[in-house]
Picture 1 (tube, rainbow, N blue to C red):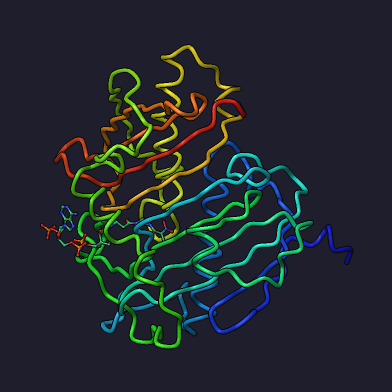
Picture 2 (tube, rainbow, N blue to C red; picture 1 turned 90 degrees about the horizontal axis):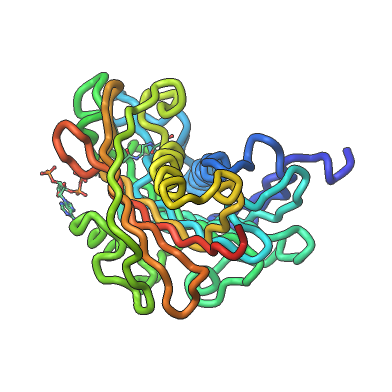
Length: 318
Ligand code: KGJ
């Protein structure tokens, strides 16, 4: 088979890493959440390979389904590869590496490099992702926690339970300075990734609030949980409403260049749920083309915080 028609060839680089050649196909590129869904699938595959655990059909010690749930998802877009800039046929070299993060969680890092950069055999170190990322590459960071339903049939109260065969002892440790625990904990406490505004960002306009009714056609995964990638599209739906209220067009939204996006997942929901999403905008004083949106998603009935997102967009690219 010609290499450029092969969609994915995953190979194990070492005990904690997978590398694959990817030809971008319709199922992983759009102005929506497809790419995040694909990256999440790679996380599950990388964890399954590195931990020798049947991630896709995991069970608690009592035999109930256990899920490697997404608790924090961060993506940093590069000049060449960014979340909504992928096109059919683009060739990528994807390197994924899994790190231990306690007995019930893992961190998985991904680098999506243009295939032409020749990074296929370059291991992915945390220092590369956190300190000296290649400017062309997209990097993703997934913090996953093992969960199970506390009550069968309900997503409202999930609890932490790891499957008995989850084997993490041989994984490398993520150096403490890179741990996202404090960042995510603060975002959860404050309902915002911008509680302490990053230097150079100033508020832009008033907060916007809108409602979103959980869409059982689009937002639930095959296990009946709100799909982790749908949180991205639900936040994007709220953000698009704000852009439209500012007179910005849909075409500009579809061309947006995400330079950084963080999502923290603090709760799930059942069919019939309605969410209230608050969006606050920020703009950069140093780079006026950079705008940030600070978003919180709450259950409209209880006010419970379910998720928080922070996204930085380069408007010049759209
Ligand atoms: N601020 C305020 N309260 C906090 C904070 C904080 N910073 N940190 C912790 N707490 C509170 C929690 O609300 C709990 O309070 C308690 O401290 C324990 O927190 O409810 P209470 O007991 O009054 P801890 O240890 O963090 O546990 P929990 O958050 O309670 O449970 C962890 C969970 C991972 C179960 C929970 O955060 C959760 O349900 N997150 C959503 C995960 C999720 O739904 N992800 C997307 C699902 N889909 C998928 O993952 C997949 C695979 N998919 O295909 O779609």
